[in-house]
Image 1 (cartoon, rainbow, N blue to C red):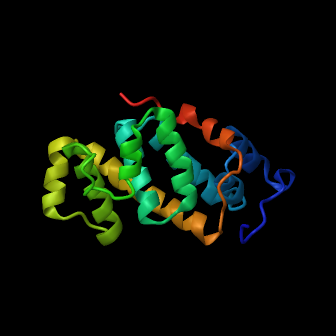
Image 2 (cartoon, rainbow, N blue to C red):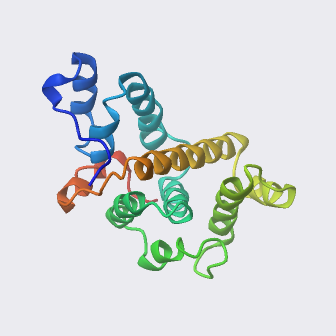
Length: 185
């Protein structure tokens, strides 16, 4: 049970209610909409990262899954495992994100991406060797986006865990977000 009750949408401002209705009916968004300014800023940043990002959607989802495991965020894992499956990601890759860059299931590019995420999470700064490796596979803009995606989902996990936001009980809610992620290429 969450630490703070979910709001009655009728008690939200018109702006917050409209923004909430534009997104998938996720407990994360239902809780966050109470902090209107933060909620609107969060959704303005998150939606473009997911819909129009530079990173290949498959690689972006690997990064998000890894953050979910590094932070022990059950909600992030629940949502993003479902999304990875909806994208058609191989089950061994999904399971491999629990182990991370050391898992033998990942290509050199994928392992480099995961190492970048792990070092960002653990040290807040990626080492020179990891950065150089990532530069062989990604443009500067993609690396910047990867850094931002990693930070965004670490922040999201902190919010989810601080307020004890539980995953949705209806798996159809995860399915409703499929349009946010183009299929893997």
